[in-house]
Length: 629
Image 1 (tube, rainbow, N blue to C red):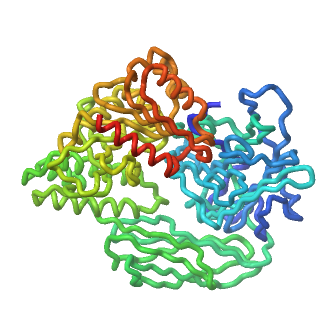
Image 2 (cartoon, helix red, strand yellow):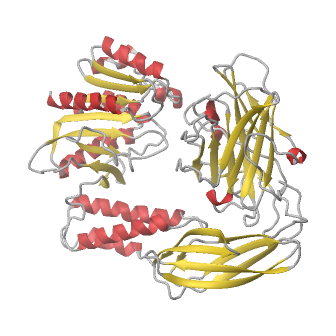
């Protein structure tokens, strides 16, 4: 199994969805009149939910043996999607990242696209744990091919239980955690499921509804899925109403559309209140809407006039009979002339700093890309804030000032690449009381897989005496193995040295996870640039595992001679479930045998995470000693 990205899924096989305007009942995932109790045990009465088998079973590289019988059941309420897995095993194995290593599971929910694959989806994982706060217990792993890694809210519950000679795994996933998905508003949905079952201490079997490379590799941007449909509620014993903002971003002057859907035992009138507040809490609008509910699911669309509203971020609340049905941000975007921005920056009327010019051009380019990629169901809150920051910096630049001068917090800069003339970003952070009259050592720190440089330097990666940069390197999954990646790293260093006071004789290269391998690789490519290497939770031959073709393998002698006499720091967590600590220890031995001066630390209780304060102190001392040589 490729650990490139440790992602399994969960799923269901069903008929196509009906139009959101149709009120005819369809077969599909059953509607539940009561919310299940989530304790890992199937509630009395829920036995009527069909126990469905999985279509695909993987034994990976395990010895041939019997697999465990695993089934799943699925239902929904107006507020939640319900999942129940049952394994013919009288025990639950609590492993780290159980959704990969067992026991654990994943759900893929998709918005279907014209072909058989889609890049619009949520990949949600659950890892049973005795620790209710364990970070992978329940979490969104990927959203629309991007890795937000954000936690699910308290409205989502999961629990597991071994009982009556079997083990049950339950989840109640709140629709409010995964907008815009909801059976009453989303015309079509797709899905897949993956269940990982541990056997003994080392073996894991995998079960899914559909084969999909994205189960194993989060670098896969388009996912395979099965259609998913939901039955409409029938013979309800109480009324249900759900309401949604259909498009949470608008241009100034556009109308807000509210979609509602509801059902009741008998005909009744119900009021829906729309409240919109400005960022400062001041009320912009309060409007009451009338709906008529009945025994068949009814759907409504209401338009709200916002002509009095200026651009900005607003808070919308939809309420009925004392319940908050939805609360979210509404962004009103101004009309933007992005071409005019670019022309003015290129013109540079008052001779602003070239570094600031490249950075502003990159930010304008990114703003355009963000707007182009914005989905109709997404809020543009972050984009609006990004535009306001960019516009403020742009105005300073037009006045002849460097908008980034004197910044102490980490921020993102850009340079013009000689590789292909594109604008490429890197993040930078300065020591406290940075003085341009002094020369500072430089720490070049490389990010891990599936992410980029943004946020990497929000926490310091040095002892506070270094200027720190984090190149993007056009790399999220490819181990800094390409020529463009290596060129970008070198040019990010050159750009930082061009604009800031850096001692080029005191440059250390480091990185975390994939960035740890990247640090080894980058030093091997350009040993003349660096005086030390720091490998934090890295792997000595990661590129050979992930990529095709021969790659530098830093347990082999031919790749180690360049490290003779070089100070190298190696850290790894003993509980790392992503990259094996044994290989990090092998790397330390191999480097010592090659003549490197290795300082190593193995944190017993750490997983794939930044080291303990005690190890950080040792690392800081190593940085201090290395940059003095």
